Image (cartoon, rainbow, N blue to C red; front, side, top):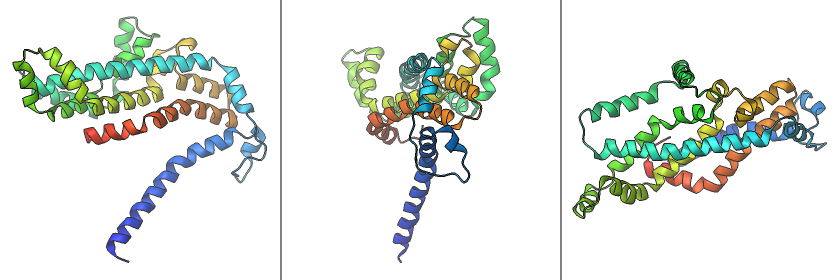
Length: 274
């Protein structure tokens, strides 16, 4: 066996191992959610459904205001994605194309924000939003997530690759900074916009800790927080807990199936992991 064939075999083996590692938990969740509760605790654990039932889904859907939670998550995640694209692209354009004193320091300061774990910012953020009476509102969830250092970095790197001659030609024709940004840079940065928007939406949809802290009214909570509340009420009812997990993941699965081409193009276009 040549080294090339050995290397290819190791790569394919790693690919299959990672695929199984990621798919098995979701497959097990679907399998468990479609079983009667009595069959979920059988030892040893068995695969396959002998008595298919949607009882777990019926109980989950009937136990809480899940449609309202879906709506809350959709509105919050969409607004975060839109605002992140708008403001982070403007910040990236400023760092890439506008020369001002301290721009290098600002860039490295933003990069440093990537290294700070979000949990370390929870207490000061909570006190700030409590001081301005935004606790238990959508804005308490949306505003902190708009300022995404990674998104600013992605746009800055993408704009650095736009030829300066293109911008200079537009300025010779009398175009303003705003016109150049809106008519030239934004249309050219579709891969970066797709990557930032999709990954911001997914991350916002899955965010659990911050919405749990700042949303105290049941009608305002997001889907992960609401489903966790329902799951807690079930105790160790595995079928209902797995049904909650599947319902929470379904929208993201739809987003991936609809925009998988954009996701690949976005990552390939920016050349970065987001």
